[in-house]
Image (cartoon, rainbow, N blue to C red; front, side):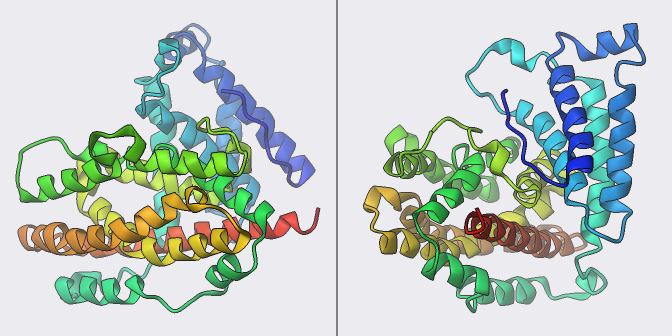
Amino acid sequence: MSITLQTEKPALYSYYRKAEEEFIQLIQNNDLDSATKRNPSLMANFEDVLSFALDEGYQNSNVCDSAHLFLQRVLYYINRLKFFWFDDLGNYTNEDSTILFSIRKRIETEWMEWELNHIETDLLDSLNYEEALSKRFKEDLNPLPSKESLFLKDEILLAGYKRLLAITSLDGLVEASQLSRVLGGVGNEIQLMLAKIFWEEYGCGKLSHKHSSYFIAMLKECDMETDPETYFALVPWEVLANINHSFLLSERKMNYLRYVGGLLYVEVSAPSSFQNYQKAGERIGLSDAGTGYWSTHIKEDIRHGEWMLNKVAFPLASKYPDQAWQVVLGYDQQKFISTRAIKSIVESIRELDHH
């Protein structure tokens, strides 16, 4: 995978860039675990940089964007091996590497501890969960406009809209893939409702109706590349964290309730967010194809949000009353991470005005 790196503070950026490039080479090794056994020092330099980045990212009181970007990119390189990209099968040689598993676990453990410090968790286990989720649903279905949402709706021009598409394409072109990872197992009404949402996201079996196809149409309207990961270099660490968070929750069944809470927020909040993006595209003068992904979600995700609340979240909270707080935690944490990601996208768009 060929990736052009972002520029940042020269010294730290160069330090992390070299380690990132080294890691990309390492995971392309024919058998990383065996190679490391033969040469125990193979990972030494990367491990040193990783330790430094973990301290800078999660133990430092000041946010170090370089460290966060490095850590989230490393996580993404590992997590992307969980998807099939219809590319060279040799690219998946290390998908079950114990070394990559260890690196992922190490980053995720410190990252999640850091993330949870941003969420109010003390009162979660004393909530009435149906009331708490209903209240959040109502607030986030029609939220008060933020300065970021107003900027995206009223101010961005074509260059800014293209930057929005570039950044969000990393997820938009493989949309709902993580949801597929939680659909297996014993059949019940909860599972079938999640499968129904997944089926609609995948166009009910028609490629032209698959939501990622609508995203491709938006990119084509703006004369942009449509291959996944083309614009990886533009993606802020906050957006990568949003993607990696979904990987983390869908990877482990112990996190199932948190994943459902997070997905509930995504489905509930998408219509209001995407209305701003749609209005921006219309204001710029794009055709329906240039905003089709947004308009599709505006229509479908209102329904999906109601399904998630009434047919998935409530039944799960009832089935697992002692752990139902995890659904609320998943919702609140996804809201925080998503809001942070949107702010980073706006910041990236604003940077265009300074060049």
